[in-house]
Image 1 (tube, helix red, strand yellow):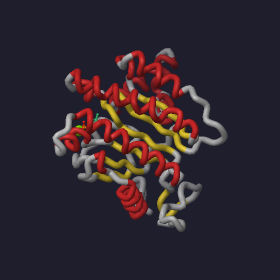
Image 2: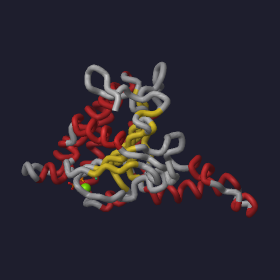
Image 3: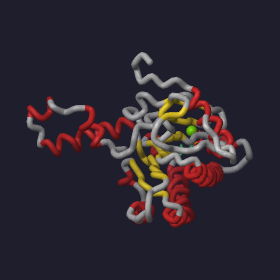
Image 4: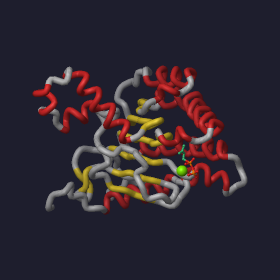
Length: 253
Ligand code: IPE
Ligand code: MG
């Protein structure tokens, strides 16, 4: 992988590196906060707070490496079935992140968007999300940060199809004309390229209802490292691994 003098990649430009498309969209399933806390005899919220701290460094690294899209799966539809005190802690951690980082993100030209069914989130959190999403980025946006919260891949496909049918008024001839591009235009991720690389921390080797449609040809990197311990060095290692893969997209190259 091409590197500049400080050891980081040259970043995103049009074209290819080592035969692979430049890493434009990095998706991460952040897992292992609870185990990180348990290993230190701490409560689970401490693990979630530590995990949030780790996101700050990750964002800076993505800006530095000129990766234009970063999507973080922080809270799945299924996570909502955790006990109420855990859900409350997760909401608090999310609010803390927006309070601490919101203005810094905008200052550093990082846009912020939440995808997912957040109707059940506390009003105060929903308001903070809406305010941050509405902030204008000066000049060019350096990083599109998307947070998948109360998100699931199946939910996304269902809501996309419902939204598309509502738009077409379900005329039978239109239903048969529905194509992939139309569904993509209605997914919560519309406007984002499909992820090039998915990183999952915490040892599990599964997708866990993340972007089922969008991950079709994504390179998958699984690591036993618990999210709060996932370092910027390991991020670079994962990116180097990505560039060593031969991406064929189902064709013969
Ligand atoms: C990831 O950490 C954060 C969320 C899913 C909200 P976990 O809370 O799943 O951590 P473990 O898997 O219990 O270690
Ligand atoms: Mg977990």
